[in-house]
Length: 101
View 1 (spheres, rainbow, N blue to C red):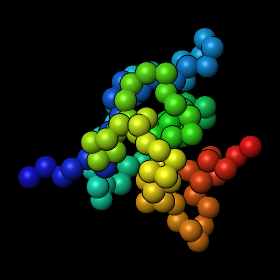
View 2: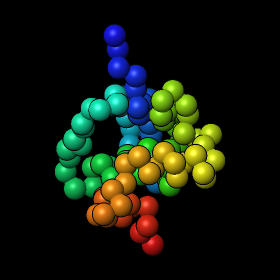
View 3: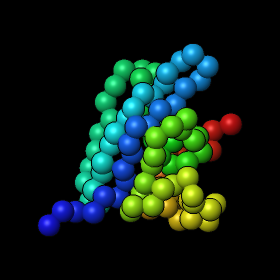
């Protein structure tokens, strides 16, 4: 039996002017799975997570959680999704990215 995917990105791209910050990122994360993103400074690790969490929209590609495209989320649905990952006792890197000015 295959574990259902919690998060799936396919063909994720994000550009800023002529800078291709993300190029065709594909990622599948199953419920209960731990994933580590490794890369040099300014490689796009935080940008990719910020796209997955919603504050920044990718230029192309799709992000799905539990089979649903996150672009269609209402604010309430996005908050419910984000609350699965944020530890209320400690500020996470995702929370810091979401609250940065």
